Length: 393
Image (cartoon, rainbow, N blue to C red; front, side, top):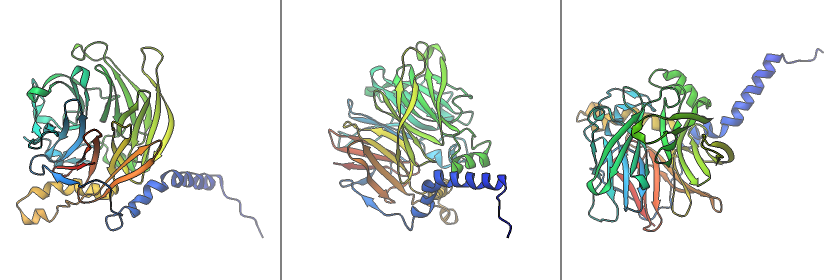
């Protein structure tokens, strides 16, 4: 009886498939395990409630400024019709309610207030804020803007007492900042930016989806350094590492950077080393696997890493395509609305490891969670949600 000898290309194919399943099996299994009918609901938050549903909508990022007892929110109701990450290109115009909002959470009567953007008239009609960051010592506000003319980073001088911000400059760099998403500030003139994809979904939709679901290492972390003041012009950009669907980024401490990979259901921890004035070097030191697609990251006053994200990618995709119909007065259009997105928020520390704080659909499409440990107040924002999900420990 003749013996079977596999051909070289058959062996290579089997090896490649095995490697793919090894790397992608966990994340792809969540397409089944985290489906709306199977998702196990967990709520370890203290008396959570949806607040300000009539004031803000589609807030992607939130920055906690405990020294001022305020939070800053990037909110874009027109994300329903323009989202360069999710592939929605119906109408590029910005909503009048799109902008950066400020909320004084110590004032029980305060509502989120849209801050006035000064000297920004040329860009205001194509303002689609996503990731934001704040450098308190210099009052510098960094905003990722997914403008129809091309994604950019906007810089403002923030004036908290006046609920206003003066535009300083715009940074556009189509090579190393083609798909900017989240920012971690190092100083007034230096920061790290994630690029979520190599292929832009607006121009290469099929390739961008393949990059997402096949977990190609097209995303990146880019270092940006201005040579002097921001207004004096552009310095230089350096790609430090490449990650599949690089999303949220934050400093865990002075020497460790955390980066979320939405495709890999993983948060990567990197040591950040620099010996001179050049771009820092990142060395991967740990991976944190999570049972959902992580979006944005933050660190609370106790050093715990808060991770917010999406349990089920197909459900998030459906919400992104149908959310614009939820505001319609036409009953036929409202039938296309899928308003119940899913959320998952967890915290991680070296001592306590990963702990789920919230998983469910009472507040959907979670993107960011922050917590003021002194006041015990926490906030979750939702990419396609009305209001904020607020709890108090």
